Image (cartoon, rainbow, N blue to C red; front, side, top):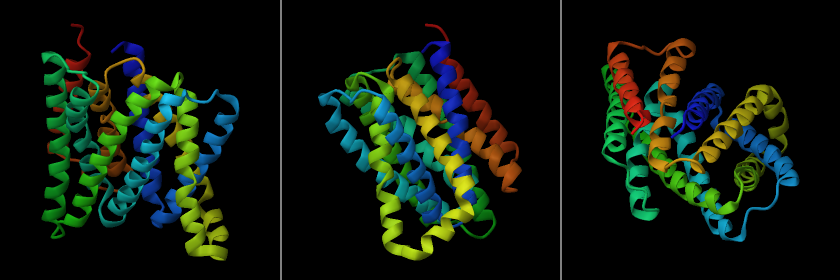
Length: 285
């Protein structure tokens, strides 16, 4: 992984945590994801007019990714509705890297070397520490939200699945932006259509009240995934997945600063473990 690729993935981590925080801030989660998905569909449609179509062999992967992204969004909405941001976000993101490592080895024959494997394992240990801190904090407050944790774990499995699918699909597509355009366009129409069916005439004033935050979240969401897709054409999937999940550190900081969630010594220790894992992954072989 070159410094340029690593920098792109780290920037994606920051933008990803930021759009998730915006989504969490809008308490009506269906409305929040309607704005973010709809804004993503508009951006995807504009890109689709400018970029060449993905190669034919990429389309089965792209359509499967659309379904996985919809499952991911449904589970993420449920996680945010049931739990605290600082609790469910690390669980959702921390589940993915180890699963991606296994799937990448089995399905696309990307077997990490010993140093990369150690880096992924150490980074995941840090992520797990953040996740368990969230469980402990919720339990200490007398409210271990197990429904939120189950939804967050399911979110992580969906992330792992679409990460591998998109890693294969974008390499077959012939260009990251064309693949991204159609992915955002197709997945972005489903949630707004469902919300319009459910809320009808009441929807327009509700959208106006939160349009600025929601559309900013949409732009950050598209930018974050564009960076990840580009990186997946230039480096193995497992280290990218682990490095991308440094977003949980940003998410923990956002939770502490903006949502007034506690950030103590256990999170600092977990952050140190994660930094050590990232250093192992990026250290020249």
